[in-house]
Length: 444
Image (cartoon, rainbow, N blue to C red; front, top):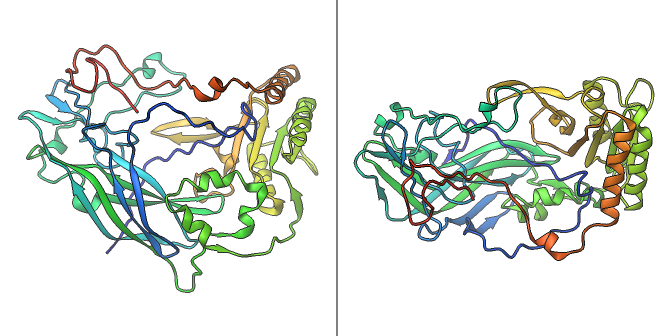
């Protein structure tokens, strides 16, 4: 038995769409296009004490490892690619070291959970891959930046990187103790969440052998202090005004345990009634904000408009004051905020400056979505309409209202999607394979 703790890299959560599709968009229509096989989960136990399940990884014959022979000036490499996996969390040596795909899933935990213990983990294996002499497992690479005001070359793929040192060891990557990793993420609104990472392979650089796993059976226990009741949430936290958060909570693989272990409490009167939707606007854009508020109220979404500025009933003038105003409404009102719209460009409602991936002074509205400073998991959805004049604000609001009043009714609109994804052509340094065309990479 061992506590599962480790350093965690970067977790990005994408909040619900706020403006373009409306605060409450129509339910998604199932997509009929064929999907690649994904991770299968057979839950054995999900309760207030822990979680047990059998995880089955996709069959390599169907999806498999896409073998890409890449010449990086230092030799040839074979890359393992499976759908729905990441590859940045399993090698402490970072960029240039062997890349191991892993599955990541979210586990909800009772309040006051200190950590999660892995009682047992039993992997099942496929035929191992013995790399040809002189061929290594593909190394982790830097990703191109998404946005920048620097040199346009920064948008291109960074140069291929290979660090020979990690490839000279006889220690498998990851080690047996690190095939399963669990990390506390924090809370989203009220639910405690942990990340469960499961390696799909293990590589020994000295022998060139890659153990490929077909699945794993896990048994986990929540470590709670004495006297804990083992509940995940209070019943008022799932009130109808916060119905949208259930979609986020349902992403946990043990969501059934959340619903089965609620603390029944009466709804307590608060200092203010509150609202689902808050629009913060400079006084000069108030007319456009009121137009949007009127429409949202007609749709049944409780909405409040608050102006920036000093004095009673104002949201404040600095980013810190506006952030604290949002937090105060969230923490003291009966109906807690779920959505916030900043109706102004950054010169009127300033963003916060953060550091990420080694880059500093990155403008972000993330802080406006946090109920406290304990973690960086967003607790409510925040959007911004970046406008400089009332005319611009009114134009955008009118478009939103018109779209929501008359949405497209053609079934094809909801059944088809265009997705921009990683796809390159035509590289001459990648050999043919049975699953890809020459000169291409692909991402599921």
